[in-house]
Length: 204
Image (tube, rainbow, N blue to C red; front, top):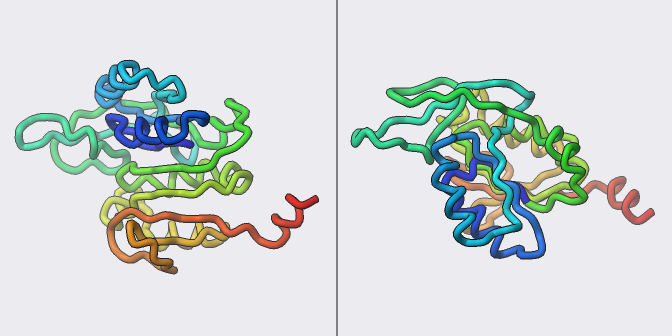
């Protein structure tokens, strides 16, 4: 599975323990967040977890990551974001790759699950992995927030429409109610429904 926006590794560590025979690739471009996560991964002996010091986007690029400063002057590294900056922040230039390039470079044989919490950049990361999504049809657990997506120039309607065109169905969490449109800021699960041609191809 792939954790996009691993932050301090809370989800990555959980996923690695849940799937000891699998592998977790945790994408985290923030140097500060990685300085928190890397020692924790080593301390817990999670050999099936790889920390990737990159962001994911629609195309390879060097972009500015904004890490907001809280009123206490501490770093809000869990809400670091790409796109338009808002308020005082510590800025870092990061390297961004695409999911497709990463999947090809690693020669992934399967991809079952993607979690993405990247403060409005979710659609950009997914668009850079369209071929990979179509190949593996992983389940997607995404933060979707209209205000955050606006920073990237996207909307929840863009996201729902783009995934819907690839036969993904959306569910609210944790209630797991099927929905067809954005229902407010929160986490959503998207599950692919292969079309008949895809099913026939697999049977052959």
